[in-house]
Each structure stands twice: as structure tokens, then as C-alpha cells.
Length: 461
Image (cartoon, rainbow, N blue to C red; front, side, top):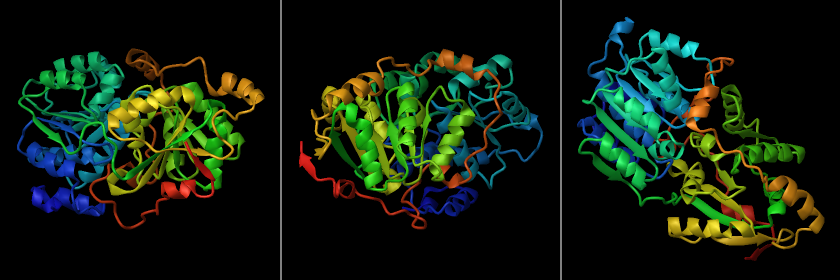
């Protein structure tokens, strides 16, 4: 099937072609016709399968039928609202809206916390058709009366499961009360839980359920592997794997903000250029870290789960779980950063004895066993006692955990002015949501897990 067969407007097809895409992904193939019919949908798909284009393209098509060419702000009320859980995801979704709507007379903007509100207020005053927002900052604008949601025709909840995980349900209910009852609502989620079902019951009208893969599964293009290693030797093993195999663009997950900062500093000290991204970083810092990582200035990006949900990097080859996530569902989201749009990717977990129970829970969730290996010189139980005492208890295990800020606290922090709205990364192609098969031009050869294991003298676990 081609995009032409979906009945999209010529201006949209032209923009899609300019991005180098010709065939829709399964979620796009199923969702786009339903959205064009004006139906509400509840759609689930593996992360990295093109959910963003699944709602962006038909939404632009429907809005273009009644678009105003006038430059008057009064002729540009907010007609579409797209809510996302994180700043990074909001920026990427808005970039997709601009890319695929570039030939249409529709105006879009993004509003999120961590930056000065004034540029966002000025953009809204100029007249905006489509707003992409995080819930907290959107409510800040509502309180400031800088946005009017009374004429919204289309509502999209992107990564709805993550919004609930982050405690945004009260904010979502407040926002729903401000919207017209007659609207088209689209709910997209990587996973479906009971809370998502309850939210859909109150939000959607006779929705069409779309699922293109079994729930809570990882893409088949992601090769998964677990290395068993003592907690105190994790950082040494990570550095060894990166250096010995000359790995580039490595996304590493930790559970805490302190742990992310500490690991990035230690890797830098080991001669591996690294940076960290998490909720305590200012938005300009987060934007720069992500841009440096995409452009290859930084070799390793260490991230927490909350900050990393919006990271979308074309053909990202390697994801490491330095610490196993507290929630098995978060494992699916983490490794979904690689193997996107049909490309190959590796997901490597460094698992200590205390985390074997977490690994077993993940295997039950994804209904498959993850192969386990040990690396010569890093066998469990072989760490020197001095190393265990100085590194295991003091630095690596991070006894004091600082959780991500709850929505109310984050909104309070977001109100502080900063340097202003950050500029998008120079290579905006990397901000696009993958649509269909990866473009053949510029595709980087992927390093399979077999190559990662080569020369490491591995032993069976």
C-alpha cells in the first residue's frame, strides 16, 4: 500500500515524499482511514512504529479542508490540541506537524515547561491552529489566560500510558473540562493498562480499537541480551564494551538522576565522551545534550526513564540498561528507542544478582527469554572486596534516590524564566517520527549483537 491510496491531500503527500517515505507502517495503514472518517480511536503499537504520523497526517488533512488563509489571529483559534508527557516528545511531535503540514496554511506551535513563557504567549497571540503541549505548562497558560481551548475540534493524547505513569491524570481531567464536548479524540499508547481503559471510557465516544502487535512486546528488529555482572563492576564492563567494540551513539538508562549524572561523569573520566539528560536539567541543557548526541559530539547519553520517553533518533544502534527498570513496561519503552522503522538495534542489559528478579518479571511480560552471558574478567562474584566496598556501596548503588519531579512540582519549577525557547537540533530529520521503511539513503550499517560479543571470550551464564 502507498500513501496515495489512503486518500490524503496532495499537499500532504508532497511533504511525505520530500521526507523520503513511500509506504505507510501498519499502524498508519490502519489508523489513517479511521481518523479520516471522523471516528475516535484507541490505538496501540510498539514504540518506533510511526504512531505520530498515524495521527498527524489525517489530522492535517481534516483541518486543511477548513483552513483559513487569513493572517488575523481571530481567524486562527486553537483547533487541535496534542498532549504529550515530556518536553522532548512535544518538540518532536511539533516538528513532525510542521514537516508534514509545510504546504498547508496551518500554524502550529509547541508549549512546554522549563523555558520562558513569554515567547510562547507571543506565538499564541499571533493565532495558532495546532498546539502541541505538555499538560503542566498548558494549564499554566490557561491560568494566565493566554490560551483559549473552547474551539478545539481535535484532541490527541500521545503516549497516554506514560502521562498516567507520571501522575498527569488530575491535569488531564482539568484540561478535558475546558474542551468542547463535540470533538474528535484520538488516544495513542505504546501499552494498554487498566488505567488507560478507564481513561478511554471517559474520553472517547464509540472508539475504534487498533492494535498492530501484541501488547507489551518489543520489536522483532531489536536483539536483546543480558550480561550478568556484579553491581560494582557494571561501569567497568560498560566502558569495556564501548571501547573494545568502538560503539557510537549509545543510549544508557539509569533509574535515578544522581545515578545518571554520576555515570556520565565516570565515563568522561574513562575517556568516553558522555552527557546526562533528566528532569533536573534545564530545558536548554536537555536540548543541547540531545543535539550533541544526535550529531555525534557526545558518544554516550545517560538518561532516566521520564526524560528519555521522547528521545527519537533515526537508526539509533545501541541501548544499554545500566540499571534494570522498576517497571517491566518501562523496559519495553527503553529498548523501543532502537530498532525503529524496520532498522536493526541492540538492547543490552547489565544485570546484577539483585536484579535477576526484575529480569524474570520482564521476561514474563514480553513472553520470551532474554539470552544471558558473562564476559571473561567480569564474572559475577569475582569483584575484589576493596572494589566492592569503595564502589559498590558508595557510588554505584546510589542509596539515596531522587525520583523525577511530580507534575505539580515540575510546573512550579517550569515557571522560572530561562534562556528562552531552545532551537531545534540542526539536523531536523532526526526529529521526525519514522514513517514506514527507513529511507535507503544515509542508512548506517548496524552492528549486530554477535559483533558485540566478538572477542570478549564469553562464557555461558
